[in-house]
Amino acid sequence: MSVSHASVHPVEEVPATEGEGGNAPRVRMKDIQGMPGTPGGLCLRISQFIFAAAALSIMASTSDFPSVTAFCYLVAAACLQSLWSFSLAIVDVYALLVRRSLQNHRVVTLFTIGDGVTSTLIFAAACASAGITVLIDNDLGSCSRNHCVQFETATGMAFVCWFTTIPSFLLNFWSMASQ
Image (cartoon, rainbow, N blue to C red; front, side, top):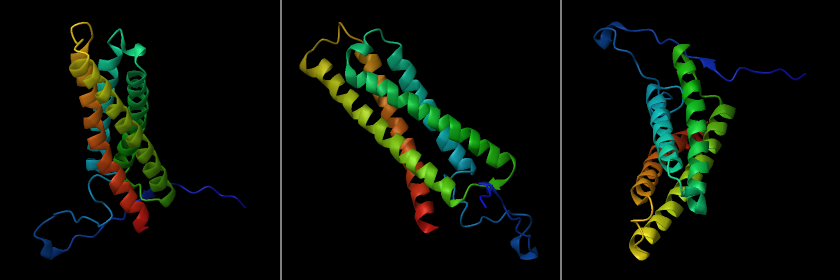
């Protein structure tokens, strides 16, 4: 018989003891900040979304980005990253509001694979865009006819987005491997 199981599990309440010096909350070992369902994880997801959306909007605001394949790739990767980060931020908000833990093995595996794929895509797109930007600026010297400042800013935002995606991936991978 196939029965579905909830992927969100309740967090156990730890009773406070008198020797703790008041009502200081105790931290469980599995609730490391930055993992899904923690305030740190939510902050990482929000920052990933902000930087990916910034890279997407800055690059898409230029009129000549479709003429370069690497810039189109950056727009596609930033769009995927922003959608992924926004969806997981919503899941994190839900888990925090209902005080549930997101330590189910299937959920952590899904988050790990998604973070690995999106971080690889955004890093590859940022590297490709950086190469084209250096080609336009330094080698061809045609920044006066192009939107080099916007290209460089969007590429920088993509790299910062990647820097905020890596901790999420590593913490999810560590959590997945330790289960």
